[in-house]
Length: 172
Image (cartoon, rainbow, N blue to C red; front, side, top):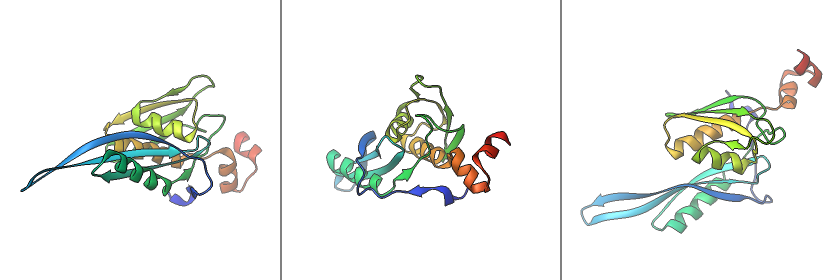
């Protein structure tokens, strides 16, 4: 899949909310003893179709989270949503993680676990069925979920890409 249909977004005039997905204490053993640092993965979004993720590393937890938020704001993408759910079924993969997103009827809620839930809520999905397979590493699950969301296309985009009318997309 080419990255031609990915829409990058500038974070300058958007009201973004951040969610901390995971934080880990990392230890480096040196001759002088153990050095502790923190690694934080953060998801930001406006809950209206724009989302991004970032990784921050620092000696203090708050600094790591701040760096993660800044990194996430540099990697924002626009996601196609239809009435609070995803437009179609889609798989996403990154490293050992495989995620599956499926549209759901209104009122279903976000049926997803941990890292996937944070990404889907940040993008503004209110109803979705999701399954995570393989690695449960939060970093890989977030990236696999973002991969699936980047592949989403709404009917208008499909019609424009094919050069046909909306009616022809649905009626074949």
